[in-house]
Image (cartoon, rainbow, N blue to C red; front, top):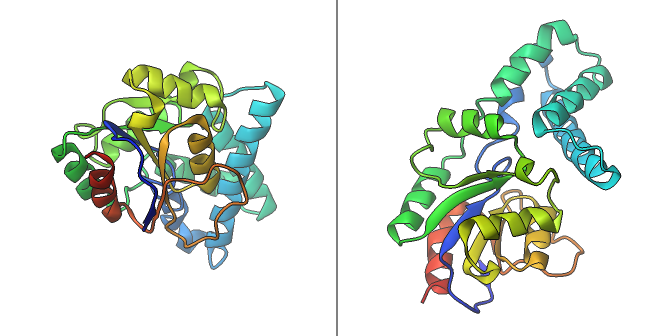
Length: 231
């Protein structure tokens, strides 16, 4: 874990998809039906989901994240020549109930015990997030759960991060933002948040300005990081 310390934090906000919730868990539930290509299929679905959110943001053609997720799935099904009648609904139902990574609840509980407010800042639509948080048993552990729908823009738009700071009533430097998505981590740092990039996959650093304050391999490292920032 590498860190740069500056000022104390009072709240910790998490990205949802890929950070708290395993985005590939939905496809794993039907892996036997899809066969050996299921991981490549899942990666294609995820890549299109992100790409469509960015393109909609740049072109001003916003649709909520559920629509984007459905559109991305339809593209992936066609690209892999999979029958929508057989696969579409089971995959979408599974996506509404993605499992949380095993390091999520212990880390959140330890952060809350330190007096930090813990919440979500996500591209997900409010109903998607409610389903995922409820299915993972996190409803009593996260507040607030913030969706980009309140500003009608997707991350990495600065307005999204600004909305979160306003809702928390905190200066950006007093918020620790945690994301497993490198582009999200670097963008949140550019806005002014303190940032931990949860680099679960051991990926190389993004070639972008404003690197995160810390790089952690799992959320297990967050409490020690937060303690170093809250003196």
